[in-house]
Length: 292
Image (tube, helix red, strand yellow):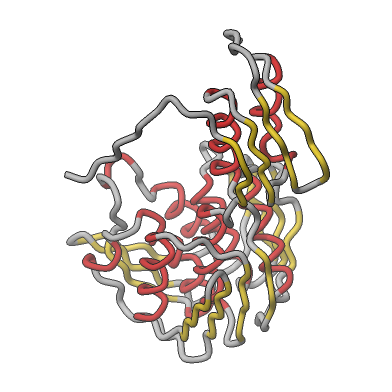
């Protein structure tokens, strides 16, 4: 069993740069399946989930190259191959390839995604939305198969604002005929980042970050460059760690707007939080923090 051993008692002092957001890079990597062009991504985090998604894209025929925090993905050789359980189980976010493959090829067959028990993270919302867009869905023997020769835009109301369903349906709608409206959509910053990347590729999407997202289908997408947003979870973790150790940490590459609740709570607890610009925060805590 793997474990972490933390030797505490020391103040955290110094500087740290936040990586690109895991929850932004994974759907954006999947979105690269929508284009025959080449997409260059900057600020890609060096984490296992990215490697797992890279394996899935490569299996589907994408050409993926990584150098440091820069990644290029070319999709001209992508094919709608079956994605096996052995690949899908490696990554919970593997189901994000369904929307792009359905949108581009009008058919897809994948095993149910892994990373956790199927019952705890059902694809029901995703499949309900795909059906509304004209897809025929068949579920059997641990696989889900979708066919939609006439994939079309639709009015979709999510039963709850699922991040994964919102992302998958946005990607499915990009190359569908007509307009799609997703209501009760998730509003996370990572969905805004997905919209920005897709629009750079030639998509027509409005409303990400709000509860209603509108997509006008286009015939094809092209090449693009995009920088992944900073990871707000990592940002908040560094901020809290600085405060609870009575430290003094300068955190760069952070979007303050994305961690406003953390900033507010740390100030309420007695920590000093200084925002130097739109991408840099300093957290200091000299005395004992108070409950808040």
